[in-house]
Image 1 (cartoon, rainbow, N blue to C red):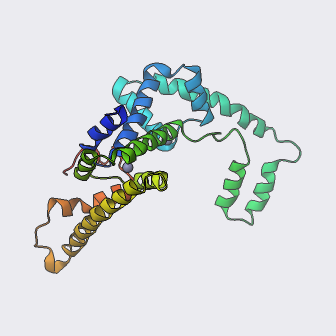
Image 2: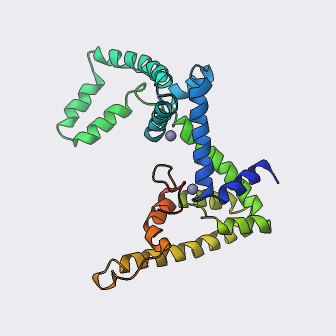
Image 3: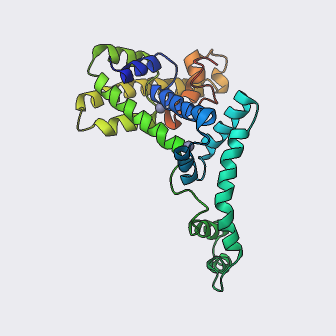
Length: 255
Ligand SMILES: [Zn+2]
Ligand SMILES: [Zn+2]
């Protein structure tokens, strides 16, 4: 069994979408390595600068990680000192407007346009105040998930992988889309199997959601709810939005 398939098998035994789990693990590993040894590594710093930091989710994940793991913020401090050095010259240049200040056009337009539109246009027009690339951690996480989606599609040719998948919580919608679209022409049988499995699983989720709603009705509120019914609304969020660590969807089948 390949290394990828072995990891996938392991993730399928855990709660939640297995690709979300593997993606989140890869993202967390990147952040841990960043703090552990790569804060001063030039290539890593280049990625950090190119994104002008990370997206909101990963920036705060890095902040929490350092606070919890080290009770300190030196790594974050070094990284943000770098970013401030990069954007301050941009702002200082803007603070010395030439005769025809491009911002003044937006300010004049602002009297006629809704405010948010004006602001959005002004920000898009100023290079240096936004990253040249998307968040490095998001990109790495997506590359990881795509690789595992490939392993899964190939693995579904084998009966034991299909069995393992059937006992898992299955893929969330973003990862189902990723797996299906990547394999549509290449592995039509795996695509059909995955789609039919998802349809069965969602049919059951729909039934649980409907029971959850029905049992909120005054006339039925004395009827006991099953564990699956109680969890249905949370599983629905996890299916459409993907899993996150913070709500416990990756850590706890109960709750
Ligand atoms: Zn997922
Ligand atoms: Zn991100």
